[in-house]
Length: 226
Image 1 (cartoon, rainbow, N blue to C red):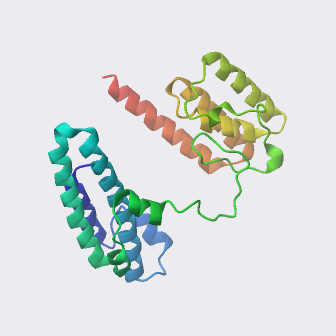
Image 2: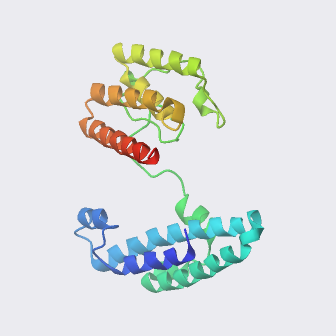
């Protein structure tokens, strides 16, 4: 993103009824405008510091355009000052970039009543009743950051997940679907597994969203081939 886009975010921040924060307004109707403004300011500041972090790294990684990245950092600094005026709390936070994110954003997983029964490659995990999940093997290869599954392996995994689902363990298909989702060559397998899991688990809303996502992907692929 260009530096001026951070300032554009601030203009959006000043409006209490923007499309960007529409869901927030619906969920928190009982909150005052001041509280909502504070929530927006915090969200924008967090995004701003991520931009600052990236631009700081790019100054070193891409020295040919260092001047452009420094201009972005200057724009981010102006945006930061404007945000400070929207939130007394943010005004006190002097950290920038990684230091800000480490202290105020990446503070651990949020508390939730839902417990994951198995990790996924995305670290999101799956939430199903424990009795509806069984692992495909003793060791999960998707835990390796550089794991590159081969077609024969995926074929074996998919067959195992289908067998598990038929035996009453749809969580196995759900996990494998998540694990395979990031691999372009196995996207169809991932989609089929997720659809199977959502149908078996009775998660109709998620199944409908999956269909919308697949339709959008198909449309984008068709436009890219034109």
